[in-house]
Amino acid sequence: MKRLAIAVAGLVTLASCQTVQEEEVAVHPDAHALAQAACAGCHSVELIGLSPNPDAPEWPVIANTQGLTRQSLTVWLRDAHAYPEEMDFYLEEDEVDMLVGYILSLRDEDYHPPY
Image (tube, rainbow, N blue to C red):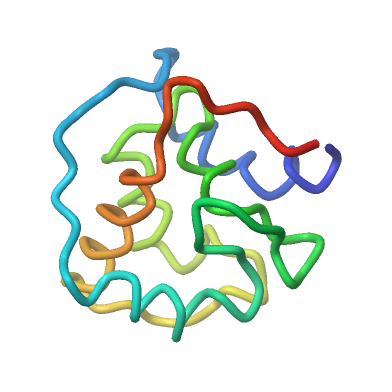
């Protein structure tokens, strides 16, 4: 639980005090491949599974974080200074948009964290 709190603290800080909301999420056809190539070395980017790096939260955990918005997630991914050191890499604007759409597509109103 400690790793989850640390990993998503920046996201929660950026998010407003609202609950996870259902919204139309368009997922780019290349989003999963980008997630696999750029992020799956540390994070589980699948609907089910544990992250290879125990300090990296699974994407469904991130997607279902209370208060997370499209805007807060976009800001988090655009601002390299907000990353943990392991995530200090550059994403193009279209890559940010693809990853945000993909992460948000993992939302589930019946979601329960795995731990």
